[in-house]
Image (cartoon, rainbow, N blue to C red; front, side, top):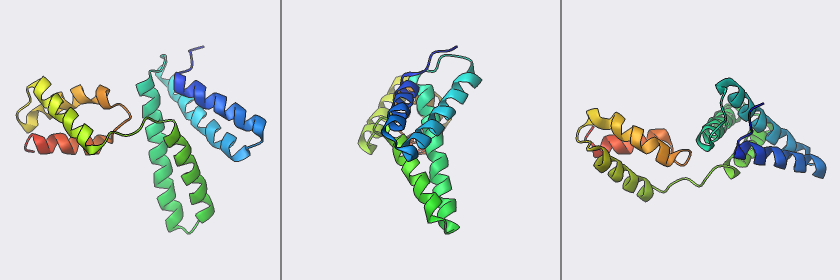
Length: 152
């Protein structure tokens, strides 16, 4: 069996601790996150990197945010509260997001490193940036910054 990633192992340990403490709500939420990480690990057929795990966490967090919207519109505050709880739990396992100033600096660095000059070079810059910001910045926000700097 493939090894668990560091984040998956930490969440699994926390789920076990929640079970021992009798915190059913936390255990259930953490188990759902572990299941998503496990599914990705099995589907990818490789040992997960931290970036892979962060991608899964980011996707799961986004799903919770979308569910909150739907439940709020439907007047289901109980379900929306559970999704908010899970979203906050997921956030706790993710690195702190980069500030706008830090992102701007990285975008400038990426443009200089790749020699990008026009919007056509955006792919080069994004390819350079992706591993540097893995899980610490929203992709859309990042691409908007790059596009803005390249005059697109």
